[in-house]
Image 1 (cartoon, rainbow, N blue to C red):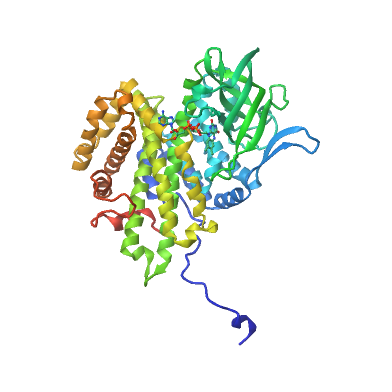
Image 2: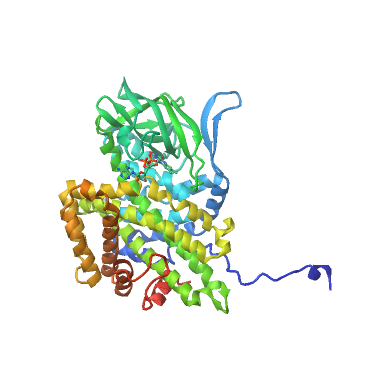
Length: 549
Ligand SMILES: Cc1cc2nc3c(=O)[nH]c(=O)nc-3n(C[C@H](O)[C@H](O)[C@H](O)COP(=O)(O)OP(=O)(O)OC[C@H]3O[C@@H](n4cnc5c(N)ncnc54)[C@H](O)[C@@H]3O)c2cc1C
């Protein structure tokens, strides 16, 4: 026996092949069908091309960008302040590729075509599966547009660069670059949800400029070219566009104090910052800053919903792939009855999450043309963000468990999704804030309540459990008296989300899946854990649709 065979202890077997590279669009029937249903199919060529990239080279970039986290350099070797964050080249590649393929800009570049924001939503959904961290600056760049339009002169000079398909990560003024990215600063130490508690002051200094003095406790993507920020004027909270370089080309008064040591979201930098007289232009009227910046937040909330639907999908695919190859007790895991029902339950959750996310994207897309859709978007974005972002956390944990021990090990990729999962529920308004926002919309905007009821009525008669659940919403909605309902808001919004999801699944023609969803999620015939679907659940159908590989 030669030395090599004497020391060969074992053959590696019973392990799955790598999942990636794979085509994330071609393999995702629920996404393809939702795209067509919601009016974005005309952009399929661009989206299909991005599906290949997201499941290929961009996944490799994400690994590098997460393993080599951004580093803050506050000073140069001589002691000058520089306030620069250094990213791994793979991060820049992620940004460059996403921007070149329209992830942040497609919806606006094709705004004259109905469905453009649905197409952007699909691109965003795919990019999130490649790298969730860089989705943050991409989203903020996409979302700033409606708010920035409150300052037409600024919009005229900045939007061509914001909507360009060029990424330029150099540390030079925005106006010296072919393309710009945008960040957002609202949260301060004394108040995040309660943004009216902002203490940062803005003092007019002439020429339409203001000096900002104060701080922001969370300030993501601090290497963006400019930021929409809120600060107090005598008239109250006001929105500003604050460039990273002052108009004279010098470094603006923006001191990065430190980078947050985050649970996840590692490829993205999030900082604490002090404004030491940073120059900024006003966007919208003094005192109307919250309303102005909320137009940006409406879109970032949609992207939280899309991101969490994408995360649910990707976690499911990872679990399914593993279970199709791994054998235990004489069978592949995907053949074991109990594992099948766990995977099918995750697939059902994913179907519902994707359907709702793309439906809300269509409502946002149509908002400018259709008042009814705008009213629906107002309430459905908050409903969807609360519910799907909340569900993503449990799905990430359950999918990780499907891989057994390797799911807990970094190189499986699953810990990245597990760490990422909670953040969409927290930022852009945490769960309770979304639920309170739903109540506020229903109370103050009768057209939103009407749009929600009209949407729910579209599936009337499809299933007795759905009819009963929708009827049960009537009394609390009619009594939407604000404070009295607050303690019940999570329950109400959860039921609204489930009814919307069930209705969408029926209307999409998935009657078997939709009926299973009603029985499990609305009628209470499933337990609280995943994998507790009733015995007659359409497990085979769900699994075959979810991952045809
Ligand atoms: C990684 C990361 C990056 C971020 N990046 C940015 C950024 O770039 N720009 C930015 O502006 N912000 C950013 N944020 C901040 C984020 O938006 C806030 O943390 C979030 O909005 C919550 O605000 P808060 O942390 O002050 O919590 P609080 O407002 O103190 O809320 C704490 C909890 O109380 C709940 N709550 C609040 N009010 C009520 C109420 N009336 N009734 C019941 N419950 C309530 C909330 O839902 C939450 O669960 C980031 C956060 C994270 C984690």
